[in-house]
Each structure stands twice: as structure tokens, then as C-alpha cells.
Length: 395
Image (tube, rainbow, N blue to C red):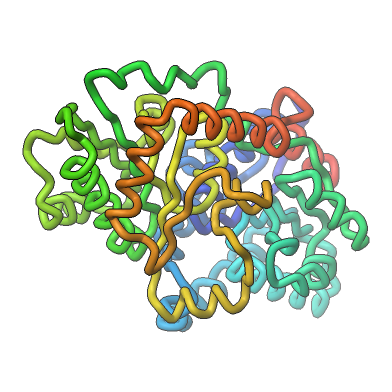
């Protein structure tokens, strides 16, 4: 084990996927050097890994362009306090994890103060850097100016950053440090004869849950009324965000008037849901990559405020919203976005997946091929390799 005593490292994550990756990286850093002091912004995964949290990701949990505008004063104050903390703790490095709008603004303030004071620390690294290949391509020049290194998720991102003169390090996708396909996957038809189990992933932000979960539940009701002719029993497993009150979920379930004969459970561990489900209804995001690793048929559903959707539609100019479809440049999983997110349409797709074995098998095959291409890893532990690189770089 390396002995790098007294080093302070700050990690900044703004949402659950970043917290998950931050927790893995924190474990790897402390495994390689137990003397490093870790602090920053994160969630339960980072806290359990040994990060002293100055703020929770729930403080940054705001969805949508329009919604963020209402919280600008609070976010600016939080940013100032974080920048002060980073310098007060004499941090050797700052590790940004996804969440680009906020994290890049923090990096800019750090960079400016370093320049003004003639400092070389903290070194700034970006783990899960912005998807500049998808939108806001001008960010790449900002990353080149502000960051000492990036750790992208995909090999083509690594090539893009390298071609633009940015120090990039790639050893695979960290999601494979969490999900081992052979350990979790099971036959999709295991309980098909007598039971349908639907896993729901409505998101981690309150705005997402209140907009998306009702649509998912109504789709299941529509499926039961229209397609569940044999009245098979239906189990619903809902992914619950740890900092969102159970009462929020219970209220939505009650208002949707779900029948008492349905078995509905709130579950914190997302992989348990993926393992047990026949079909998954999910928002877009990193969870789509995990679902692909499990090889489980899924349907992507997303809805936000009209203004946020309009702005995003204008800026992104893409045909798909799921990372699986975007990276494959074709529709592997069906997407029901904004006004298209109708329970009747989603229910029809559920029936197609659950009753057409050829359709289901083809989707699973394409998900498996996608995972083999985009989430393979080159070492035993992706985050161990990244942690070693950072520790060597800041010695």
C-alpha cells in the first residue's frame, strides 16, 4: 500500500449515478492509500466509502433548465462555500464527477483562484466528463483549460479528448465494477407463466418522480385492463431514492388507485429490481446501461416541464434520449417522451415484450451486444486504475 500521508482529496458528485461512481473511486483511493483524507459532495455510497460529506447530493437535486433558474442564489452560495472549503482543506486534487453545469463552474472558480495566487494545487480531474460528443461541444475547450486530466466512460470519448490535446485516461466503464452479468442475470421467462413482475425506475429527483411515476403506474393499470386477459398476478417493484420520503411514493400510488391485489414494493437496491423483474420501465440515464448489462427488456419513459423539454429539444437535436439508442444509432428499446408518454401506448409495448418471444429475444440479444461493445473493461477494477493514476499524478 502506498503511504501518501496528509493528502486531501475533494470529490464532487451531484446525482445518484455520480455518487455510485464516487463511492467506487473513494474505496479504490483508500485501498491504495489509507492516509488520504476524502471530503466533498455526494450521497450514501460516498459516505459509506469513507468520504466526509460537506453537502448531500439532495442539496443539488434539481431537474430541468427552467427549474434550476429558481435556485440560482442558493447554488451560487453553495459553490462559494465549496471553493473556500477546497482551499481551506489544502486539497491536493479536486475530482469532478459528472453534473457538468455545476461542477465546471466550481472548476472555473478554483482555476481562477489558483492563477491569481500562483498555486499549482489542487489539480482538477474529471471522472465521467461531459458528453461533449452529444451536445454543447464548445465545453471541450473549457475542459482543456480547467482540467489536468479526464476519465471518460467510453473509448470514443477518450479518442475525442486526446485528439483535442486533453490528457485522457481510459480503462473501461466503471459500471462493470458494480454489475457482473453472470452473477445477476436470470431467464426472463422464469416466472412468466403465473406472474408478471415490472420494475420501475422513475428517477432520483422529486420533479422526475412526481411526473414520471404516475405515468408508469397508469401504464401498468392499462396493461392489466387491456392485455392481462388471463389476469396473471402483477408485482410492481419501484426503485426508491434514499432521500425521498416514502410518503411521496405512497401518495402517488394511492392517487393512481392501484388495485389492492397488486403487490407493490419500494426497493432501495436497484439491482435487486433488475434481477427480479420480467420487464423494466425506466427514465433515461445511467440506469439504462445497467439494464443493458442485466440483459432485461425495457421501455424508456420521460417527461419534464414543457419549457425544459422545449429548450432541450432545441439544444440537443437528437433522435433518441436513451444512451443505449444514442450510442447504437438505432432504436433498441422503445422511447415514450413528453406528449408521447401515454399509458395506453406504453401498455401496448409491455404486451409486445411479454407475449412476443421473438421480439423479446431480439431485444435481449441487442442489449447484450451493446454491453459487449460499450461497457467492457480492460482491467480487474476500472476505479482502482483511475485511483492509482490520480495518486501517482499528485504525489
